[in-house]
Length: 402
Length: 197
Image: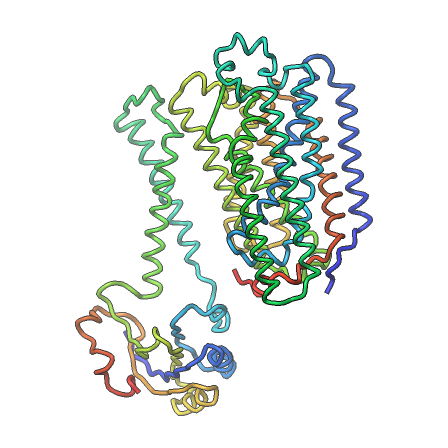
């Protein structure tokens, strides 16, 4: 049984090439995107990509927490995969923190216009919101959330690695379950209070500072969660194709496919709930968000987003045979990740850049972040055996029958 | 409905039943059905049952519901009885979506339940032959059809060799018929042998 991942030279090179493309795009952007408008696009692209990929990798930590709290056994055979992906959270968290601080304290207001104190004084709506939308609160909340995410992620990973060295006994099994449940419970609360409510409001919704939507955070969560599940599926399929993860079979893939299918529909539910209430009430302060997206030049992107993220996963993943087919799930997972990247694109850009450009710059940066994630994940996978051999639910995962 | 001859084997244990099912199939006898007190994982594969097409039926019912809701509402609000509701257009697609969703779910749910009942031949006020009264309690019951190619004696001997605890011959209807279990059936304790054996 191949239990120890050895990094293939090709994949390592690929990750360096992708990171190189990202850095190159950034440098080209620095030169090509000049002036007030260019600078806005430069920072908006970085904001979109860094927050998207941070939340996508954070979805892996949430996957571990949610399945542990539900006493799920089926995922143990590939639990090291979400663990490895989640270890990108501290890295991407640091990047996001630096980016956000430059945007907020950089002296310009092209991303968040609430950073201008003089402007806020004369704006009744923004002065009411100033306790929440202020540099102090923004910075404090960002430090606390990214810090806690990184702390819990590393803690869960280290506990899992430590458990490999224990002796196999009923007592150690009980201890593993107990302490994982406690720490995952703690993380679930943190996650609900950050990704489930304030973080997307601060980082993304405050671009349109006058506008608000109570669905926004859940919408962002659904978007990154389904992409995170697709990312887990991609790495599981990759490892399986290389002959690792011998305990994982079509049954596990089927369940991951069901997750991708179900949460694509969940995302659509939130997409529609946010849209329909605003469409029905038809109040100017709310409809201003959808005006450029539905009736402006962003219309094709807005509906392409719905087709890629709802109609295609719904029709493609509906059949049992597709969910059990490694090739099919690979393509659909890539499609879903691209679709939600596009979703973040249309969330950030209409409020900042305003005009629709072909996203060469944003796509290049996205490839760079994919390179960072691949680099971190393969290094983490190579650090430990791929099967957590002492986990009491391992047998349940091996005999799993969906 | 045609009555057929069956040889019925009763097993005590799932672990005996599984290899027995495989051996009976390998020997070429025709299994009518296997009754278990709880769902047994993988028994459908062992019996060689094909994958159910209930999902496909559900999909067809679902799109029927979608089409019904969308076409009916569109017809009503654009040509039959146009109304001005909150200044919205006469074809307000977003307002139709929740109802379309509900009808999709309703059609597929009700349709699938009725199809399931039909496929399993269960419904109020119909009866089906019960091979052993304890098949829903703690016994695993395998009914083998006696065909022109097999004799009842052979099947009985074979069942005994694969571990059946109790074996008997029954002549029974294969389908369902109108009737009521609560009015027409005797209590378990009053039933005659061999059922009560």
